[in-house]
Length: 317
Image 1 (cartoon, rainbow, N blue to C red):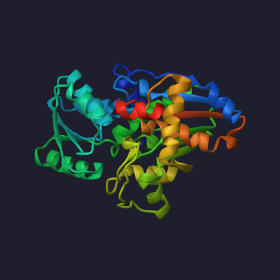
Image 2 (cartoon, helix red, strand yellow):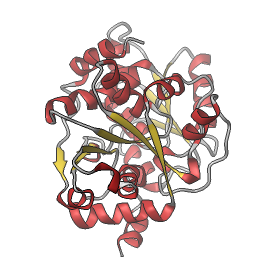
Image 3 (cartoon, rainbow, N blue to C red):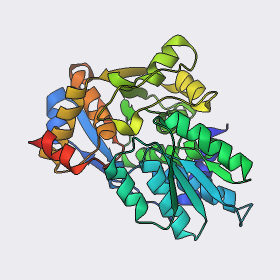
C-alpha cells in the first residue's frame, strides 16, 4: 500500500463530502501537563465520527470504476452510520450488518436513513466475517470498517489536516479498535518522516491490538464490556492493519473503565462537548501520563460523539 499517494487521492476524492474538523486548544489539559494540548474534533464530523472519511473514500473510489455497484458493510455503529449517509447521499443500494450488542445510541441514527439493517453475531469480527460471506455470495462490494487500503487512506486525511493546522506535533494519541484510524494517521506521517510519536489507546477490557502486537500475531481474545464500545471486539484474521500498527505505532496506553469515565466527564465540563467512550481514550491516556510531556505539542483524537444518553447522564452526574 502506497499510503502517501492513497492519502492524497483520498483527500481529493472526499473533500466535498466531509468537513475539515477543528483543532481546539485545551487550556485545562495544557496546564495539567505544562504543555500544549489540542483536541482534534472528529466528534464534530458530519456523522459524528471519523468513520465518514474511510467509508466515503471506499465507496466513491469503487463508483469511479463501477457505477452500478451495490454495497454491504458490518459495523458496531459509527461506520454503519457513515455508510448509511454516503449510500443515501448518492442513491446507492446498501445493507448494514450490526452486532446484536450495538447500543441504541448507534442503532437509532442509522435507522433514519433508507438502508437495510440486519443483525448477526455478538462480536464485530463475527459480524464482519458473515457480511463478507454475504457480499461474496451475491457479488456485492464489502466495505470494511478498517481492513481495507481505501478505508485506511480515508482516515489518513486527518493527518493531512493536522499538518496544515499545527506546524509542530510531538505526540498524537489515537483510539484503537481494528486499527484503521491509527494506521492511516501514523502511516501517512511516518512515511513523510515526520518526527512524531504515535500512541495507541485501548481499554483494558478490550485490548486486542495491543496484545496481538505484543504476541507478534493476531490473537482471538474475548472482550469484556467497556464504555469504549466503538473500539471493542477482535481483529479480522489477516487484517492489514496489524502489520501497519506493528510498523508505525510507537507505544500503547491501556485504560480502566473509571479512567474512561473521568475523561468523558472532563471533556463535558471543560469543553462542553459530548464524546463517546472511544473518543475519551485519547484524553484518558494523556491524563494518565501527563507528567511525561512537559513543553511538548500534543494532539488528542476525539474520534466520535455517539454515547447512550442515559449512560452519559450517569457519568456526568
